[in-house]
Length: 146
Image 1 (cartoon, rainbow, N blue to C red):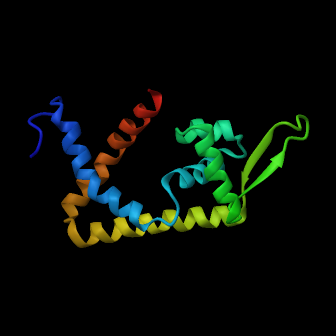
Image 2 (cartoon, one colour):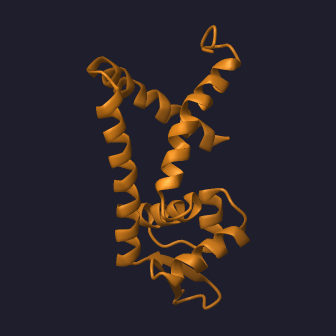
């Protein structure tokens, strides 16, 4: 049931309920967990990072980030490099394999959404969806500021 107004608390519930099937399907299509994709995306966009920095970036514990990095390292998607000036610090970097893996994951999600939109949305619906993207981005960024 749609919310009565944009300020109604049920608007958030309706929004999440509307997104849930899409997000469930996207997760099912992925070969890597959301956290591992987040690690790769962070390294690709921001460059080398420590485990602690990755944990903050993907909002997990240091242990969770460490386990994700270990799994990514096992498939050759990331590499560890000891800091030249501080031998105790280890930098995690994305490899060419990691970049290809991230691209594959991203393309699969794009293809899935594109095909669904082409199959089920009118041109008018697509225009509304496109117009909503900046608002959804703004909402997402505000969640990161919390």
